[in-house]
Image 1 (spheres, rainbow, N blue to C red):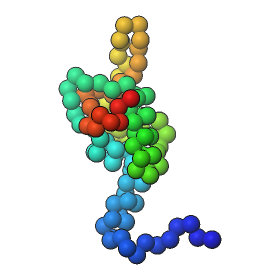
Image 2 (image 1 turned 120 degrees about the horizontal axis):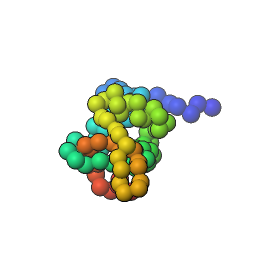
Image 3 (image 1 turned 135 degrees about the vertical axis):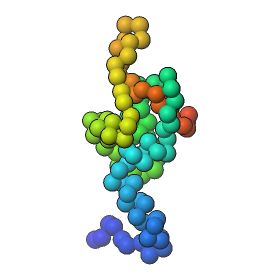
Image 4 (image 1 turned 90 degrees about the vertical axis):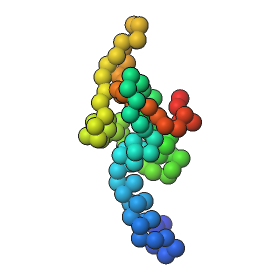
Length: 104
């Protein structure tokens, strides 16, 4: 029994875009959902959770947290450990989520 069928009602561009999104879901997430914002930091675990949620809502498979971090760094984003009182969490530096509905 075939699970994957060829779609004859979609254009080549639509199929190509879907393929590219599935191949590089992190880059697609960053392009669609993030923007540079000086002095705005997001905890690494929260951004990863939002990435997984974005993938789930858009039917895109997600990468591991380690792979997510590697691709983000290759695309020019950086993270660091910041102190907030006694709490020392890792944060993505100078980025903001465009769509607040994905914020935790």
